[in-house]
Image 1 (cartoon, rainbow, N blue to C red):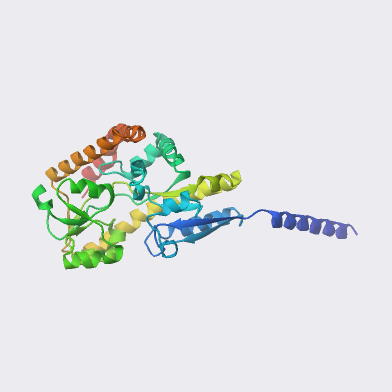
Image 2: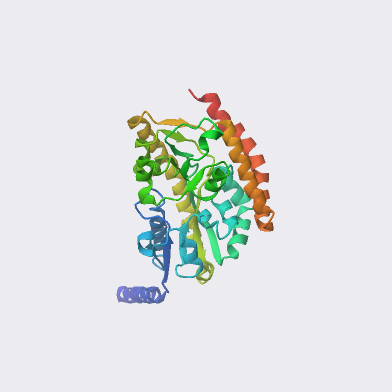
Length: 354
């Protein structure tokens, strides 16, 4: 008899629990990504985020992902998110520098912080607070979404030995890097992704800056351009999860915490994958295309690029107090951080390399 009573009580508890679970609200969010899921690393990151939040929330959060093939606006994801067409955007802030120049700082700027330096500045040097001050103006909440690290300076069909060699060159290089190179006589051009290889092969352009080995290898640039230049223009390429502020604040606190945790984990994975897959991709290029030469721009070219960068940044700082505040913050931190980076990482590599 007692066993029957216990059994009845047990099923009553199960029924009550199921009833509570059935009445729990499910929050459905739409995410717009700047990259298709076929793009290495960045294409997979939103899917990993989706899986994490849905699992950790026990299904209370549901995320639908639309890539550029669906929303047709890979370089307008921030706009789709701020207007509420999507709740979340997975994108790179510097795509929107034309709307707000301050956004570049939270992806990368030429001759700026390295990935580890940028993360330290962001988390502990005031970067997070400055980022939110900027994104508040756009009705967005900002979370880091991963860093693909140093970007290479581009694939060139001829060697660059002087400033004179740059003049008149047609180079596919976007953003602030293109703006800087233009000051040195380069014709910075925009070419659709699907036409990059053909344009380089046929000589429509003389060079192309894309990303780094893992992203470049499938594009085939190594087949037609034999000088692979080291980077200066994007030393730390941070990606962002951007949340529509109203959508985010409408979520319960525990679900907000789940989103923040998942974004942080995805960000770590992106950085780890970039390091690992770049190493493998470069090894493959080096093995299969031994005629590719890794080169660095001459000192006079890098000095001129650096001066042009400072000119552009200082001009913008004179017009926008918040831009100046962010620029001053990064410049102050890079002075301290770079001394330690040289003492630590650089010294270790230089002194122990066999």
